[in-house]
Image 1: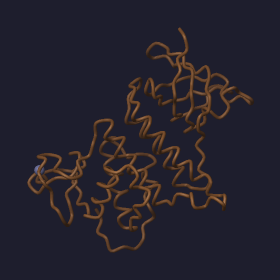
Image 2 (image 1 turned 90 degrees about the horizontal axis):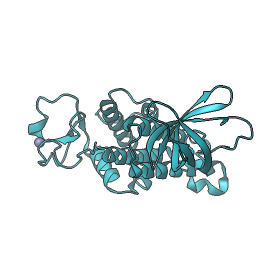
Image 3 (image 1 turned 45 degrees about the vertical axis):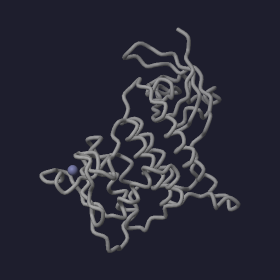
Image 4 (image 1 turned 90 degrees about the vertical axis):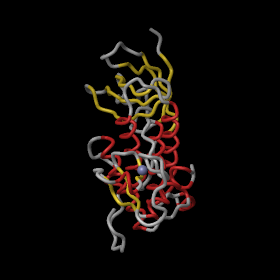
Length: 271
Ligand SMILES: [Zn+2]
């Protein structure tokens, strides 16, 4: 069987034997796959940094029958994930990898999902110039990283069929409260009107400012660049997204809780 070409994001990597690796790749062409890269960690390996975690690369893969690991025969680095000193950007990359891994099934190609993830990893990587004073203007603040990740999460969820209804009631499509706190059904796929929220479990009351931020981040592709949320709203947006992901994944996400901004004294009520 001939090796097939694909563009891939490395979303997991484990050592195998002394010098080989088992990698989980999210490919544009074939979706998620697990493959053995023989000699990947040998000094002067032909794979170089192409199979490092969160690298974007072009690979040649020998697809095996179900159950067996595929084989990566060549990998060529397209973009290396480097974030300098930004812990938020590093965690953001790890979070994107976790979402690609948990929201997708093996062998289910979703090119749009790949493109969204690629774009976010490249933007997060741009903060690697932070240590260079000549480029300090390019550094992404932690708040901007969080806004980018919220935009990314909402896009990924939409693409895998979990679009959140942020304007109309997720249940009856009717209008929701125009001001004050809005009921958000974590198991219902979005906001709920007064009538539909009754008797529902896992409903949180979300502030109008938080809802406005979520709507903007979902609807506008570059709103994350200049949103500049006050700390209380920034923290609330993150808390809502983390709770939503916990319900969708059926468990607490590993990385997302680490993205929660450190709590500051605020006057806001908990969501
Ligand atoms: Zn309703």
